[in-house]
Length: 67
Image (tube, rainbow, N blue to C red; front, side, top):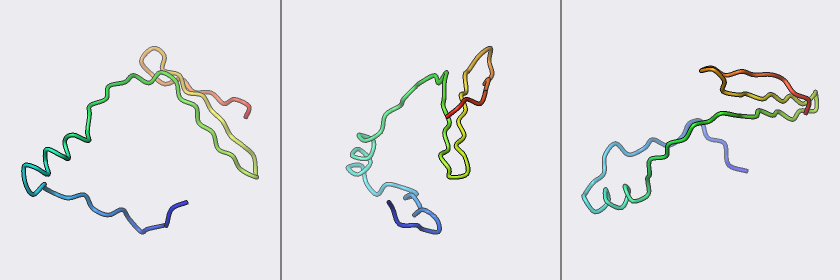
């Protein structure tokens, strides 16, 4: 469990030199994906909720399912 903060620390607005920029870029990659299914689940003492989402015909189709 982490510590609660009012807001995240800001990202640097620039990289100081070429060596630091080269090192920073070596830790990033472009990822391309197509998501066609997602599942959403909330566990609660007042009742669990679960839903499925399917990408069909250019839009998300969603429906509730039993947990």
